[in-house]
Image (cartoon, rainbow, N blue to C red; front, side):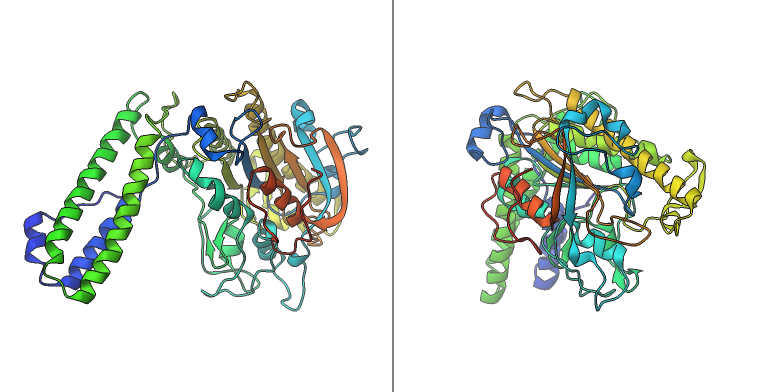
Length: 465
């Protein structure tokens, strides 16, 4: 967080005759004070949320969405057999140890990502539609238009139960503007989470910043005290601002007093956040050292972000997350696999066997990273004695099916976890061509979210998951 240097009270007093400058200062101070809470909920507090985002045992129920780019080689992706009697495909071999905790979901479509009058731009539509179900507006300007993503629909209703309503992660660049794919804004390809139709939620790419946001700065054993000092400092700043504002109020016009009251309302909201922080108690303090920043190795970067997501779930810092492993259309090379060509370039293989084989290797590599994450979730015990994976619902998928042809039906999607015992894990199921949005609504229902009539092109809630 950028350090803010406050002017002295004497300087402020000298500037009171310029109310516009004063109001600008107050707004700037308010922005730097709008901080999240810094502690997880304990099991006794779960009852306050009733059945929302909780399992039958009272343990937290988590929901996450992990996105891989450019679709998958179909022959290497889909398993043999259906139901419980299925054989893992080549790409899914890394999931062997957690086979009974996954559902391979066939027949899920995003028809709003398919080409239409708006022409090319399948990569932008694929990721823009993935959690919203809408057809995104073709524009490279500021008038972007998508939809509220399912993670934010859920966060609005259950996010108050944790320190962070949701977490957004990436191992790619952060972009919310510019032209990326055939006249579509980069916002669609670099963001999975959408707070509103025109407001993507920027993901965090830096492991160090994510860690310090979750647990504070400093060495192990010092972070809790550091955060408590920070909270005390924030309270003292609030006291200073409020006292100074009361003095200023006597010198303002009626219109300016009204504007000041609006600002004081935002200060009261910050006070509530600090109260929430103190209510949660001492922050968790993982034994791991603070990450140094973004690793040079893509594999290390992915694994570190996955590890931090496990910690966030384990400490109940959040119950909702999205992770964009790489932007849709990513042309990253994989020297670790001996592949100098870019991923996106290789997916346009035109049925050339040597290029298909290289894409299959990349698909397998991404799956290995995801499998490592699931294994860690499975071996980490939750507060009810079950595993974190049992008490989670984790989607792994892409908004492109066949990267060569840019198809968006029968998407490559895996739903991992037991949903606290509500999911039918350990099977390959074919849903027969229904909107993926239906499954997203089914997941939200399990989170205790009040019924949402529609998400994008949904036709109902898919509960048979």
